[in-house]
Length: 261
Image (tube, rainbow, N blue to C red; front, side, top):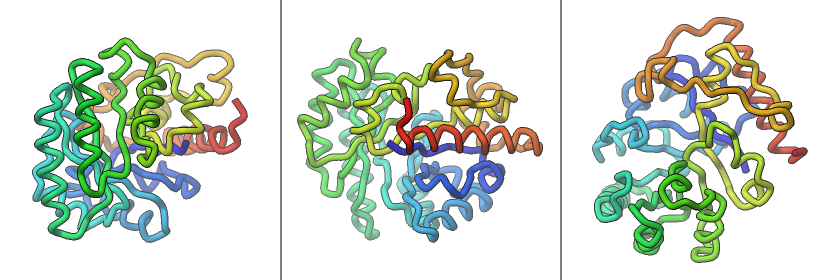
């Protein structure tokens, strides 16, 4: 499993080390920030793997025209189709609409995000989304454990059994980093995105692999840096916070790469 670290727009060039080769960017921010857009353009040109997401997690709509505009700028390897939290009907409708729009402009590599109020709705939604041409990956939201009373790994395992040809991406990581501690998840999940290691560093906490032995400190949340969407506009980087983030990212990426848990 590889991590996609999510930085504020103007900090991307400073805090993401060159050794991080998988990325997730938000289409709305690409369209609004030339600094952010150029960072992911450059990483794509380096041959890094770039995913483009909507701003659903941030609570903002991403019109298809904006998604297309951002995709043309970055040329991502994979685009996350639109979804609606806990609403399988609207998720299927919006995902098909997004895929159809993107097919017309030459894109055909997608991540679909199943939704549902119950486990039955969730997996039925996944079955429908799997039939969309170009869906190669399922994105599993962080909230599935709370919604369905099952560990996130169980949901991933069920999806892998149902759709052995699909890859899995975890949308977010729990504040206890439970997913990273699970050997099965590390072996069976392709990628996972998170802003947590960036946020910890920017708020003065040194991220360390020792956390996996002695416990993870409280996560302050993006609220400390402007909120879910306002986080991308945060612009108070110092040399100390830059180094904290870069060192923390490198530590986590190295431990996952070496699988020394």
